[in-house]
Structure formats: structure tokens, C-alpha cells
Length: 364
Ligand SMILES: NC(=O)c1ccc[n+]([C@@H]2O[C@H](COP(=O)([O-])OP(=O)(O)OC[C@H]3O[C@@H](n4cnc5c(N)ncnc54)[C@H](O)[C@@H]3O)[C@@H](O)[C@H]2O)c1
Ligand SMILES: [Zn+2]
Image: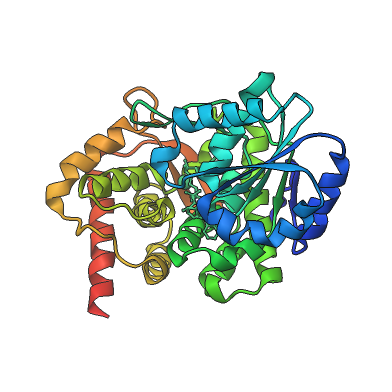
């Protein structure tokens, strides 16, 4: 039986983006409208809407892509642009881009004149299934990711998988990492559908359905626990070890997209779920093989010499409670428990399991 998860946030998932944006522009007739893009979404995404935008007086702001530009200097550029082009509290910002643009532009719009309306049109799979709900906005500061920000819900989110056609494959697969996580914690059939097909070959209507299900699941947790005091931590499945792996890759000057690290983290955390909760080892083996088949091997060959540093990163994870390391683990696929501790030996065993699965994939 499919567990119910209703959509609470103001999100439209459509295969008719032009019609939906047309409705939006009518609602904001006689107000000044600003469109934020980055260089790539100007090239690949804006043309889908440009006929519509031609009939309106719109000011366009374009930022450079890349995490280095998720910075205060870009926020200042956005504020200046809004000010110089006569934005007021009744104006609307339409953001067309990935999670980076919607995070930073959402912050600029939320703070300009104490907050103006903004609508997100997320154009990467990760931003459609993850960043689009929850209302987190912000930018990197002092070398720390998302250090400054506010939580503010966009007035509307409009999602159309049509934008994904031009997305690079590694960005597509990265979003997939978060989607399978949604399946693991909440919906086994969603997980199995995802694992048994190739995302790049899925048709637009089907893709819209899968995106909808993932958003429903994320929104279910965000709605009950917006400030991540309890059940929202379910969404951290795969992330405690995943974030430590991400730090390891960065230290080796390699930076696979976030969703890959989450997928490899899920393999270790599935094994921990076996040790701590008796999740069947056959199930752990089977799903881990499928994950490696989709996400491939990590860019750094992980071995025993990395364990000490990985344990240190895991111990420093934001999600910990004082000294206690907190995992979200599964008793079955679709059934989770938050705030689960694990000993160093158990964590090392779960890393050994990940290494074993990587070795097995080398042998095929
Ligand atoms: N607010 C949240 O809850 C939340 C959740 C997850 C991630 N994030 C943030 O999102 C960011 C990562 O987002 P992302 O993975 O979407 O990356 P991104 O926004 O950096 O986009 C990835 C790349 O794809 C390009 N691009 C975007 N759409 C495209 C399209 N349709 N066709 C071709 N190219 C396109 C971008 O220009 C960029 O180069 C991080 O900064 C992260 O902190 C926020
Ligand atoms: Zn994530």
C-alpha cells in the first residue's frame, strides 16, 4: 500500500510550463517583474519562455554559475540591480535556475525592502526534488556552505521536467541520489521504479510523476517539522557518511556532485541498518549493487588509511547532538528511525562494506 504524503507547499508540477508562467504574469500585471538566471539557464532554459516574456516589460539579471559565486558579492549585485531598476515591495522576482541560483536569489528577494514576492522555476533535477521545497535560502560565507540565510517560502514553485533535457548527465544522476533516498525512507515502490529504469530515457509525463512523488515525500517531513527538530532528520539518510565522503573527495581535489556522495553514503548506512536494526543483509546487498550500477565508483579509492579522517568528519557533522553521532537508519525499506548512534567499530564495518561493493563492481 502506498503511504500517503500530501503536497502542502505551493508547487505546480506540469508539462506545460508556458501556460503556467502565462497565468503568473497575468496575476502580476502592472507590477515590475525581474527574471534571475545564470549563464547556462539563460542559454538553455530562457528560450523556452522568451516568446512569453517578449510581451512584458521585464528586467533580466544574470549571474555566473558555480559555488564560488554563491557569495555575498552576488547578493549585493542582485540588491543593486533591483534598486537601480525600480523594484518595490510589490515587484516579483522569477528565478530560473538550479539550487544555487534559487538559494541566493531567494535570499536577495527575501531581504530586499524587507521581502518581495519571488517564484522559483527550478531547472535541475536536484533543485526540483530537493531545493524547491523547505524554504531554505542563503549563500556561502567565510568558507562555510550556506552559512548565512533565512527560511522563507517562495510564493510559488513551478516545475517542468522539460528543462532537464539540456542538463549534463552527472547533474541528472545527482538529483537521482536524493530521489532514491526519498524511496528508501518512505516508499519502497517509488524506490523500485527509480532503480529499474534509466532516468535519461524516462519520458516527460513519467518524469513529472516521479518528481511529484519525491516532492510529496520531502514536503511531508518539512511540513511536520520545518525546523528539523525531529522527524525531518529522516531526510538525512545517507548524508552522515555521505557528507564525510564529500569532504574526503574535496581533500583529494575531486568534487563529484552531492547526490553521488549521498548514494555511496546510503550503501554504508544500509549496512549500518543491518547491524543495528536487522535490515536483511540480502536486501542491503541487492540495493547496494543497484546503486553502484547507477552511480559508479567514487573518484577516490577509499581504504583503511582514510578511516581516521572520515571518522573525524562524521563526528563533526552538523546533525550530531553534542558528542553523539546521529544517523537515520532503516529497519525495513520505507521504515526509518532517527537519532541512532553507532560505535566507531560499526561505522568502520559499514565503510568496509562500501569498499567491498566497490571491489565487486570492479570484478564485473
Ligand atoms: N535550499 C535547499 O533546501 C537546498 C537543497 C539542496 C541543495 N541546495 C543548494 O543547491 C545548490 C546545488 O544545486 P544544483 O545541483 O541544482 O546545482 P546548480 O544550481 O549549481 O546547477 C548545476 C549546473 O547546471 C546548470 N544548469 C542549471 N539548469 C540547467 C539546465 N536546465 N540545462 C543545462 N544546465 C543547467 C547550472 O548553470 C550549473 O552550472 C547548492 O548550492 C546547494 O547548497 C539547496
Ligand atoms: Zn542532500
